[in-house]
Length: 262
Length: 227
Image (cartoon, rainbow over all chains, first blue to last red; front, side, top):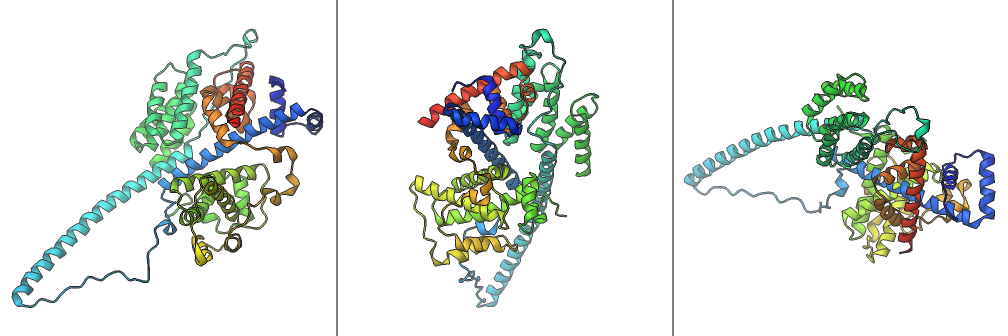
């Protein structure tokens, strides 16, 4: 059966369970008597299921990256097994055989102990620094997760001009921006922050409009994800001060969230 | 102080009806919890019983979870008192067995300690369903989702044999605008106006665009499925 716009619409409604009971029964009767219709519906179902599967898989890939970053996928069960029947080898220290040797050994122990202490101190300082950094990174990631949405707000609907029903209302630039924005958001979702920042910066520098304004919001989130917290805050502050910006409220909340979790 | 973000499973210590309902309501923490549990059970299981790479094991795990998510959404999986993770584990294990067969990889002999080892993989929370399940399902056939909800059987859905790879290959080739439009239509099931707005088209133009994209997707899918 040749696919038409109307048939695609009908099949879409049928597979999404949007048909009224009577309409659904009628459509199923048609399928029973028309093998080509049944085959077309089956084909559309395969595509629908396939795309839904791909979307779900992408979701779990993103979830994995997120959980891994938050350190939630560490598990003792994943580490190589060790043989507990053989205890770890205990170092044997031989006793000195003369006083001279004893002095030399004592000095040696003293210097070793001092080195160990120094090393422990340095390690502790490094660990503290690393630990603080990890906590800050996790906090940034959490803030990003709270405010990030893979779907930007739609452009406000403009009154339809009845004389131009088949032509897009927006200029070509706006259309291109929306597509580029979707790509940038995809990159951000796939943790490619460098690419996302580059694309979003480029969009935000275009002619003012809904999509360039939206790009500023995602740029703030991208900075947050890239651990450039201060840049993210500054960007959000700009949006928060801009009356009528589509993400003004979210920007205010984000600033508050960042300030509450220094 | 640990928050719910640090421990997604804190609210779901038992795999009961509440956990299933949280998944059904698409609560992020419930999905995070299910992922962590499935990961901890399945990855060591697959890695220690075959020579597959961790990347392949992860791929199988994510395929299995995607399959489960779709079954949950379309009602083919319903809660019947057994741990959800045990069901996900079965789906993943069946996919793993198929992967081994397809790539001619031999299963390593887990020996007589298999059951004990499997019990070790269970998270440190009470879960009698999963341990019982693992003990009794060493070489089971794939658990059929229809057993979960026989009332939902429908010939059309049963006959569907989606070639995931062909769908992925076709989708990659249709172009950015079409990808946005097709995802919006087929997956999110949004209105034509909303799908059109995403790529800067008003409704009438969006209808033409959607149709052309669907035609292109169908042609590519038909071609790649045959190959």
